[in-house]
Length: 231
Ligand SMILES: C[S@@+](CC[C@H](N)C(=O)[O-])C[C@H]1O[C@@H](n2cnc3c(N)ncnc32)[C@H](O)[C@@H]1O
Image (cartoon, rainbow, N blue to C red):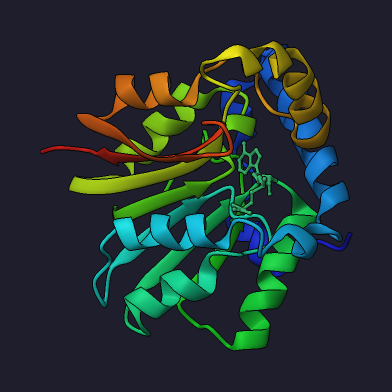
């Protein structure tokens, strides 16, 4: 894939964790997995639309807000977020997969959105010049190599009192169906490079002042967490 000029300014900042070979291997596998799925992703785009929409509503965005999205994929949340922040707001989205970034930029170009920008970067080590009013991660935190550090990066990038909404997947939390968890793990690991060593909700609890599990579905495997940064 040809290098996009827009990448020169924001080179992937994974060097910060150089030396951590497990981290590097996970990140590299994410790139391969998500580059591969980038061509087929639109098929599953509508499946989770109600949960994505509800998550964006929970950000309570205002016109003019600056929003961060991590692990944006092909940009499935862009239209709704942009609808809330209007043309004077700003959406900065980050994804590690070059092919996903290309798809997301195609979407931006097709719509002519001048205030939506996609950076190719590792969300865990990305740095931003200005803080954000809100942040969102849908189905992306759980595939990152160090979930707590990724959550810390988001928190550090937010203004005080900001909201971070996360939609993600986890093993079946309770009941006899838990017997299926090993199969589910394997599937998610193969399909999404899901990170089995880290727990998204526990990481969010550690990093943010408050966190609340607000929606669950599919036997508790799909969930939304609303986090507040505090002052
Ligand atoms: C399941 S897709 C989710 C895409 C989109 N947010 C959605 O709701 O459909 C996970 C995305 O996270 C991205 N990703 C994985 N690890 C990442 C990292 N360390 N930094 C940034 N993006 C990452 C992948 O490239 C992929 O596009």
